[in-house]
Amino acid sequence: MTSPSAVLDMIRRELPAQGRYAIVTAVSAGPPVAVTVRFIEGGDTFQPDVLGQAALPSVGARALILPVAGRWVLAGVVTAPSSPPVYRTLELPLVNNWHLEQNTGTGAWWLYDYVTNWDARTHGTVMQGRWPFQGGGAGDGSEPVVRPADDVTHLLYHGARAALDAIAAAAGTVHLVTLSMTRSDTLSNPQAAPRMFGHKYTTASPPPEGSPSWVSGYGPLTLAPFQLGQTVTWTLPSTWVVALATGVLTGIAFSSTSPTDAFSASSATELDRHASLRLIYTAPTEVTL
Image 1: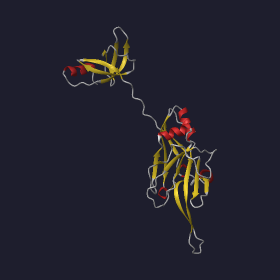
Image 2 (image 1 turned 135 degrees about the horizontal axis):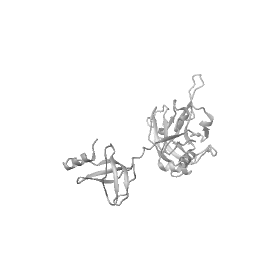
Image 3 (image 1 turned 90 degrees about the vertical axis):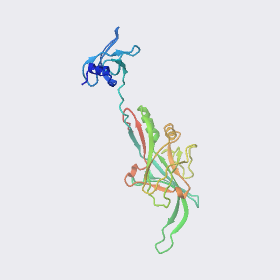
Image 4 (image 1 turned 180 degrees about the vertical axis):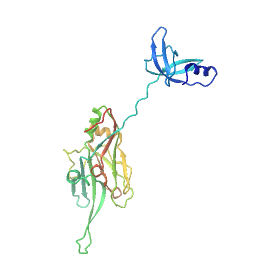
C-alpha cells in the first residue's frame, strides 16, 4: 500500500500523482477545521487541507483528495453510485379479443369473442384486412363455392388501465408498453403491415355487430410489417400509453379493408399468452394484479 508520505514524495519528485479516493475517519469543526482520512485502499490516516467553503463531510463518507503543490487537498465528498435500476415486466393477457367481420357483398356483420368462446390455443389469434372467401365443393367434383371477400377487424382489450394504476400506486414508472405477435397465415402478401386504432370498448361495453367506433387522434397508426413465421414486437407510442392510463382509450384494434394488409397472427408456443401487452416498469416492489 502507498502511504501518504510516499505519494507526497512522488509529487516532490515531479512524478504524476493522481487524485485519490479516501474514507473520512474523523471530523473536527474547529476552529481550525480538521478532517482525517485514509486512502480507500488502506494505510495510515492523515489530514488533508480543507477548502474554506467546503461542507464538512461525515465520518465514513468517501472523499476525493487531490495533490496540489506538495499537499493533499480535500476536494469534496463523492456520492456513492446508485444501484442500477431493476426493470420489471407485468404481462397482461387478453381479456377480450373481438373478431368483427363484414361481408363486402351483402354488408352483413358478424361478431365473435375469441377469448370467451374459443380455447386457449386459438383465443390469442389476431386478424386484419380483406380476406377472399372460397368454400369447399360438395364432394362430387363440383366447383368450390365462391362468395365476396370479408373485411376483418380485431379489437383487443387487456384491462390495461387497472395495471397502469397499480404501478402508479406502487410509486412505479412505466418505461415501455409492448405488443408481440407471430404471423401465421399463408397469404401471398409477403409484408403485411398492421393498422392500429384506439377504441373505448370493454367487457361490460363490447363493440356492436356493426361498424366500430375509433377514438379520434388514435389511428390509423401503421406499424412495422411482418412476414410469415416472423415474430415482431412493437412499442406503443407514449401518447397511447398515457391515453390507456387515463381512460381516453381502453384498448387497441387492428383494421383494414385492403387485401395487401391481410394477415393472421397466432402462436403454437405462447397459446393464450399470444398478443399480450407487456408493461416494462421500475418500482420499489414488484406489482401483482
